[in-house]
Amino acid sequence: MNTELLRHTEKLYYFYEAALIGSFQATARKLGTTASTVSYAVVRLEEVLGRLLFTRSRAGLSLTETGQALYVFCKKFFRELDDIHVAATSKRKQPQRVRFGTFASIAIYFAPILCRELQDDDSVALSIMTGRSAHLLEALLNRDIHLALTVEVCKHPDLISHELYHDHYAFYARPEILPEALSEAWLTQQSLLFMPDASDQEGKILSNYVHSWDCGFREHFELDSLEVVSEFTRKGLGIGILPTNVASLHSRQLTIVHLPCVPIYFGQHRFFLSWRNDLDLNQKIVLRVLRLARDAADKLRGSE
View 1: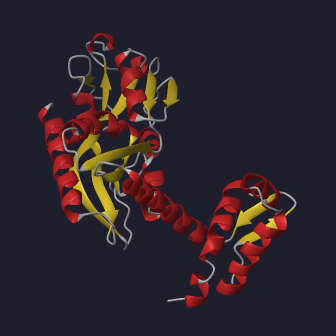
View 2 (view 1 turned 180 degrees about the vertical axis):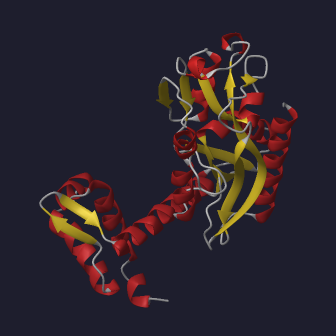
């Protein structure tokens, strides 16, 4: 234990605010103190650690690698202090808050099931954030969230991951836009709707598949989520590339398209629930959320 650093923990708040704001002067104004006081606190921390926490320039303050690590710690530390204060001052028992991150397209199907299952449980409260898988896994490693539901797994020694289900990609369209027999001439008049950086289990992204097949679509609509692809496809704006489970939720509106230039199914698409192996959350809660996530996956499969 670094006893010298323990003697200076009161300076962590100055550092944390400076990291958020990017200026000693602006931090001092916010905290009602002087810039020299903020600067001194940061310098003393740097002396104790033997590393710079910021690089200074006319543009402001930028965190060093050591500074970023300390910032992540402070963010978690101050958040947990807030939780302790709320629990200590509340007249009723506070639930265990579970910070849950999920890929946006998955959230539409899984989050309602999780919320319904937990709504009558006063011992657990959910905080849900959505984002891209890479962002969620970064938040997980930085301890900003407890659990992450993502497309594809991050192979990291600090993470535990459980596969919930897998399916494949295929081409889909509204039945009424399809001719009796597909032809190259017909394809050249159609728009392709897809999420270019969606990847499969081998890390191959959809844009690589599209370019390798060169089916001759008139237009490529490169969209930012599977839900947008699904919505555009259901609106009849073109032919969309979707995971079979996502498309199955709209089976009355979408039908699979057998293109002459590609296989019917391709690129395995997988969902995982992940958490840190040193997660500071009750293990019973973790296993319960895992069970609920698996139940949600089963219900999604059952809708095919």
